Every structure is written in structure tokens, then in C-alpha cells.
Image 1 (tube, rainbow, N blue to C red):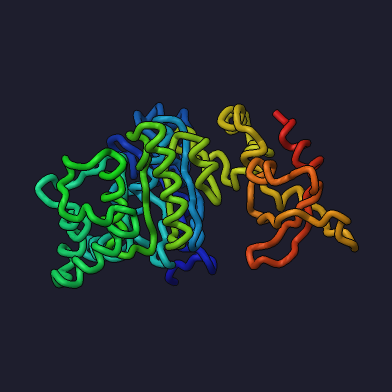
Image 2 (cartoon, one colour):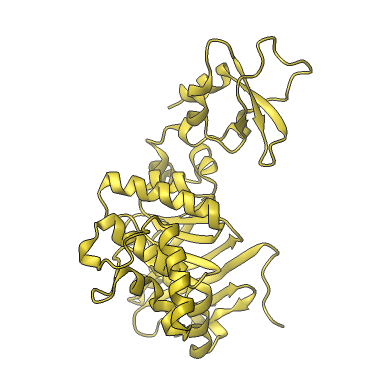
Length: 346
């Protein structure tokens, strides 16, 4: 029977293991598909990815984070089979990639997957236009078509007018924009980004995060984003998976991880997070009163907005803001006191 994924799921990992060391596959099979830390140590194996189960939903930004060596980069490379998993299933659109032939995997990577890594890996002898169009050239797309699509991607990332520049004529942030445009030129169904902004200066990094949020609002891609920075994760993520020693410790929204950490390891990640920057308005809103307040509601705020974002919107004339859903319909209300209570929490 062919494997299937739940509706709305773009990619799914089922019991994925990646072990490094001699006889890794045999040791895992003999154990019945599960090895403890002690057994790994005894067999002189490294458990880079250990029994990972997760799903990435259509159109979401799914962030995988953890300390250095936690297995996050290995896991994302297993998802595209740039690294071969030891065992498990990786389903992409319901197709088990571990059963796909090498030729099929090349086809999937070229046409359905986009990848951006920490190091830009731009081709120094090609212009911005040449770099962005390069994946399409590999696909055999005609020059006119690939350059037309590349120009659209260059405009999308804000580099219009720099098509003829070479990589060494660009700043770090501009080079990363080229890398992003190049990965988008194939119009991927899923987009893998492995710490794409970590090599940038803090100010440029913040600008690139803003750019990334803008792009996602336009493109609505399914994204797997790797980072070790929790502030970056909560700013970008719909959901976050936190990894430790190759295993996934907890998966949840930024809000869920901050309010209900699964263990001390997750709690340590969230220790210094300001709750008002994480908690969404929809989590603390109350039903609309039968009558609007005499002074009105002030301006409407989205249920998906963070509490810190709406705090400055209160003024002397309004103590109540109306909350609207994603379609702009009334969902509830939020008071100044509600906001203050969250902001006073550590």
C-alpha cells in the first residue's frame, strides 16, 4: 500500500533516524528500530537524528531550532535526501522519498524544492541575473523564459537595477537576496532555509527577516527554516520544533513553547523571552460586549497580532480595541488592562 500524508500536510517525517558509524543500519535493525543513548555509545554510533516524527503543513513556516550539534541541519538535509537517512519514512506530497530513485530525487530537487544555506554559494563569474537564472538553465529552460522569470524574482527581492552586478560588487545582505531569488526561481513547492541570515550583521539580519516576512505574505510558501536563535524563531515561525541530541523535544507554536515548555531544556530557550512579544491577541481577547463603549473601540487589531504590537495603539480616548479575524470579521475585544497584565509577566 502506498504511503499517504494527512490532508494539508506537505512533508512528513516518520521515525526518521540518521546514525553515523560502522554498522549503523544493522545495529538499528537488530534493536527493533530504537536505540537508547547508552546503546549508541556502546556501539560507537552517533545519533545525529533520532526517531523524529513531525509534519510540515501546507503554507506554514516550520522552524527547527536547537543548539549547535542538536541535529537540526542534518534533519533538514535528510528531508531532501542530501544526506541519506538510516531508516524511517519521509513523505513529500504523500510520496516516500526514501523509495525514490536517484533520478527521481534529482527531478524533485530541481523542480519542487528550493534551498538557501548560510553560505551564499553564488557563482562569482556570473552576474546577479546569471546566478538567479542558473537553476532554470540546469532544467533546460530556454534563455528568454529563464531570464524573464529571473528578472521577476530579482524585482521581488528588491534588487531591481542590479541585474548586471557580480557577487563581489554586492553587500552581504544583497548577496543573500540573490541566493533567495535563485532558490525561488524554480517556483518550489517547499523551501528549505538553513540559518540563512546567521552570517549577517545584526542590523542587516533584522532587515532580511523583515524581507522574509514580506516575501512569505506574497508567496505563501511551505517553508522549513533552521535557526539557533529563538528570537528569530518566534518572529518568523508558525510552529517550532526544538531539538536536542538528535531528537525532537517539543513541537508547538511560539506561544505554546513559551507558556507550556515540555521540559527544562525548552524552558531554558524561552527563559528570557518577553511574553508580550509572543502571546497573540486572540489568546487573551474577550467576547464583544452587547453595546459598543461610548468612546468607540479605537482601531481594529488582528487576532494574530502579538500583544506587544498592539500596546501602543491604546490612547486616552480608547480603553478597548476590537479584534478581527483573518477575514476582517469581528472576533472579540481586548482591553488596556488585558495588555498590561501580559506585559507585566516575566
